[in-house]
Every structure is written in C-alpha cells, then in structure tokens.
Length: 140
Image (cartoon, rainbow, N blue to C red; front, side, top):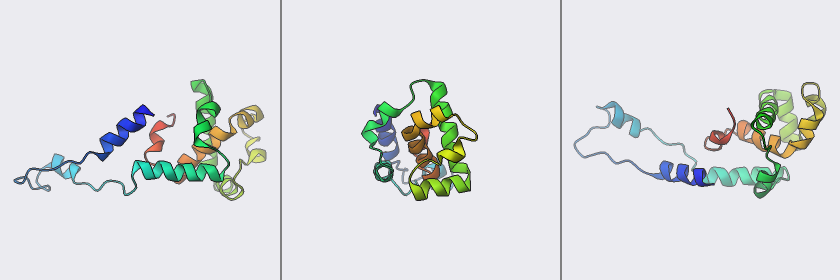
C-alpha cells in the first residue's frame, strides 16, 4: 500500500516550465510535455475492484490468496499470462467469469490452478484489461 501511495504522489506531481523555455526546443522539456495517461491511478484501482467483484473476489482478501513464495507467484503469473494471450481461453474467462480449468489442465498442474485461482483471476484481469499502474506490481 505504501508503494502505491508513493507512486500516486509521484504521478500526481505536475511539472511547470519557466516562461522563457519553449517546450519544443529542449529534449527534457519536451518529455515533460507529453500527455499523461488519461485514467488516474485511483480510477484504475476502482475499476479493477469492480471487475474483481464481478468475478466474486474482494480485493481486501487478496493478501490471503496470494502465493507466499516467489516461485509460486511466478507460476500463477504464467498461468494468468497463458489465459490472457490465448483468444479462446480469454473469451471463456471473460464470458463465464471463471477459469477455464479443463483447458488449463492440459498444460498446468491441477493443484496450482485450484489453490491459486483467485490470484490467477486477479492477475489475468490486470494483464487483459491492461491496467498500466497495476502492472508494475506483477512479477516479471
């Protein structure tokens, strides 16, 4: 939560140019004039919360469902990426609001899918919906 607040403060800061500097003449000032993303981090988190509720997941329960070890988080992220990148699995996931378990069992262990299902769903939503700010919290 603290890192999210730090990012929020960093992103919300505005940069002003001196009156005598033309934004097009210098490279650094041109970079500060780039348009920011249209959705704020607060709205992105609120939209993410509402999407999770559609899948029956409360964001307050996510720490309980998050895998404890780095390897398990990575494994769950790989499953979520697999869902997000496969057109058929993604459409099933978004339409039925559940994991396509039978298709996933061909490539992944049942224990991993069932144990970390809420985390996989939450991670897949971040990847599919392309939440810019939330992607920074996913494993690499």
